[in-house]
Length: 469
Image (cartoon, rainbow, N blue to C red; front, side, top):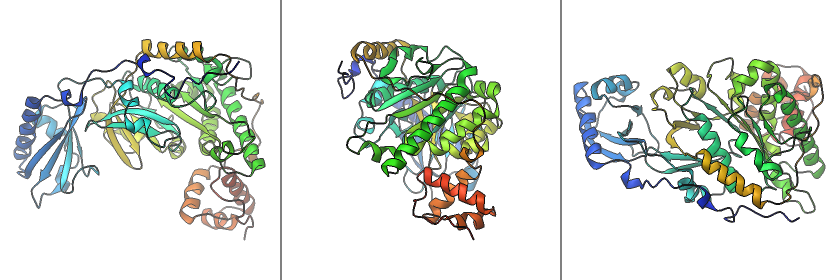
């Protein structure tokens, strides 16, 4: 039976609800004026009569107050003064941003929570040009910024995403928005999911996606994994899938999945998005083995179209390790209880100033953008999943390979220096084994193995020299 294409607007957007909030209604004018006076008065109270003007950019739950300073203002005094401002103004959700690239030169940004926050419906973002008209391979709707602008990002470019925050602050809602965004953006032959749900209650609604959008596990079940004990087997299976894909790329003499899928007479390889709802539950049961497999997938998965999204409510160093962070450069933080937790997730403060209820920081390229996360509720998700289930017909299953037992061969594992070597190769525009040997002070055999891993990941070209010094 021919598979129906449920995307490309055959997938009706009216399955989702509208928020009904126009940008003009985000912030009443009288509230904006009152808070402008409070900001100017607080500067004076702190002995800093430096405000020339204040311009307001209204956001759905938090608005941006762009403060133009008088010439000669001593900016160093403003850094880290959120507590002083909150004491002087009693304003919630306050964060001072210096500098803020989106603002004019000579200004600083002060983000302040609105008295009456508005919901950002996922549908409202999906219908914007930021999501629908970009050149993104795997577009994800993030939400609306503090200036009211729609925010979307490309998961394929990230290429993996780390989500952290305290309990009940919006992480699972964000994951649902991410999944539904991708369902609207891609066809079943272009995308498959592996959903890991250790709590067993969050991703059950997606089981009816069936073979259309869920990968098939080796045991024949679809890839909504609720049993923590089987998570390691699934991760091993994904690693084997990754190795198989690298063999296909090598045979076809191409560098990545995009080039492979462009070849004639080749069966399309769908992107695989792995979503882990609570990383700490898996690590607590499976320990270092689970973390090692996740890191290996993150190190090598991008070129073959495997992307990982991990979420945790325990932003501690034994869960969000340095090795994990090195391979998840793009992160989303929801409200946390301390600046230490914020630094653990983002490598910078700010998440402890968030208001909760979907207020987030999206960190990419060393810039943290504040936004109200897009919201999609369970009845909406159920309508979307039911529509897919009823209209995809006999979709072809994509079956992951059988996981092998036992430890993998050491040579198949990624070297601990892989992430650092990738950055080094990027700076040098290519390296050879001798370069790696000298730079990292390692032996010839290890340098050669590390170079081979860089080649398989597409970081280094095949023609680069394998010889050591």
